[in-house]
Image (cartoon, rainbow, N blue to C red; front, side, top):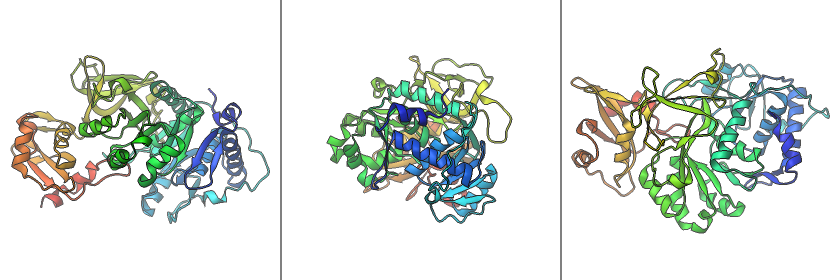
Length: 485
């Protein structure tokens, strides 16, 4: 396996544009990108005295500098640890300590305490004329450490290897038909595995072009038009924010052949709206610990299998099993388990080898008779009411079908009679008034069984979200007693 594919691509694609930083003068061809990566590699080795396996924490948004650092990691074996730049100093310090970092790179005013060297990308000016020393790397060496979002518990540090990157690229290339003609925008943050590995690295590996914009909605479709962007990855929150602009700029939208959506379920009404613009929304499934491309929904099934995350990608094994680990039948609910080269070897500082055995994801799903997978919920989010399993996402899907409800989150709360009952938190759409609990309950009765209907609906000005715009259930559960007072 070719670990330093920046080098091979510099010969293969030469002066073809690899990166462009919108709003700045930074644009790099594949040859120039490799030269920048060589310079960064030299600095890492001779200015900062780093060696293979040393961890470099980065608190930064995407930039040509950050991707040059990534290229240097392919050459030197350093491990990149991207950290959420929205965290406060104490939280950042805790994560730096957790990974035993050797260098902190930050271009923001981060006052985090760190028992390691600190620098910024502006200091990477190649202080030495020495060429970097080639390092022997193998596919099982770590390339990244990503932190899970922590939406269901404490953040875990995930080891992401060169092998995972390579096989994920093969899955992406196969399922999304990626080629050197493709252009995308970096829409997700670098501290999320999907920011690197859904489109960015697969495109660069295959000679495509990535536009770095750091997601400015007001300029989004101008950039799509200017650079002929045809492939995107977005989260549901971004889909909602961009829809009105998409309607106004249909000519720009027409250039897009694929939008991959993940992170959380997408309301069917939003799929319909984008479908009316002749845009195919391809939902997929993945997680920080694997892929992140585990399943993909083909373009031809976007509407007929609406709500499905598709079928397993080519280079991953996936089963849906019961509590005994036995595969379930079609339409039976079970837990998704996966294995293969896209699965992490272990969490950081653990000795287990997950890639060789089945990894239990904690995600509940079923498979229909055509083999398409439908995600229901996290095991931790499901609750039992009067002996019946309740899947919040099923209830939320129907709540979101009501025009006046823009966001919805259902959690189980303690109840003396039933053990747990549902409590729905909703945000109303603009210009709508709440019609009252009874009206909503009556409308739900025609859609789901009575025992699934929440016993209470709380209207909030906004629902808490994590760094990716996903509803933060953990925060709602933490504050439930305060909210219900």
